[in-house]
Image 1 (tube, rainbow, N blue to C red):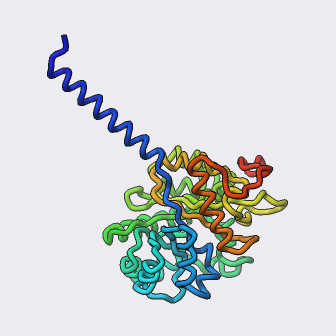
Image 2 (image 1 turned 90 degrees about the vertical axis):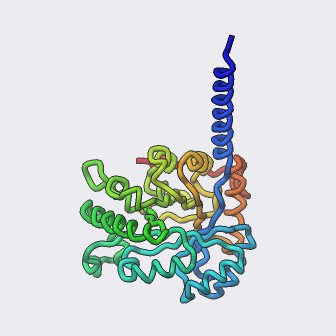
Image 3 (image 1 turned 45 degrees about the horizontal axis):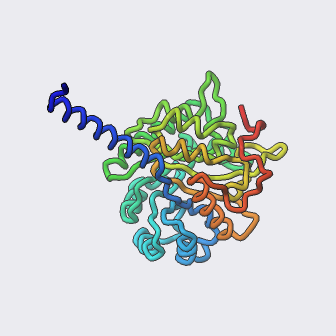
Length: 324
């Protein structure tokens, strides 16, 4: 015979397990909110800032990430975002720009109501060393950052992260392809970011398209480090062309390139991902037509469906030529 106390205890444990399992299933089935990195509409924003925001909202996007504010004050941007029904979650800045105006950037972010400030490009202690590099500083950093430079960057990120946390903001870093360049002894810039940044102060935004371009697997990265990332960039890529460097890959509409995002979305639901921003940098068709395809394709693919208008002949798997 089972005592009443043991029966009640057993029933409570079963109920708690059922509740835990239902919450796990609910979390696993919840789709990521579909956001847009506004760099995708940079030319339109420069011509008509409020009208462009409204067109973005008309497609269905509700979250956005900024990459410049085109001369508008924080209060103006906040009102324009509200008018369009958009929530500006974060904004991108190069480290060089952040170091020039830390306090002003924080004040702007607080007034606008941002949650994150994201560093979108590393720097070096003496930027003049790239002054004569063909293609400029960006090209120099693509091939010329040794481990000591990455350690210096992570020191800056930790310091900025501590400073932002006091204000209620979160600091993060967004990758391109340079982070995956082999630095020797099994170390890359990306490994340095994971090793030397403090998770309490620095989160990471994983650009899945650039990860693929660098010959890496975003699913493997998310699975191995599920708590280090808060946000994703969703970018599809055209097939690799002859003599094309990783950072020169051309983006296309989601589901129309070589990246299979279904396993990425599944991995994201098991990780700590809170926001996902579509970013398309190159266009073969009118920008807002393309961004509508991106939005509808992500909706469909997150639910296990097929991208809008996708070419069934395109291999969505990671091409062999991109693997390392």
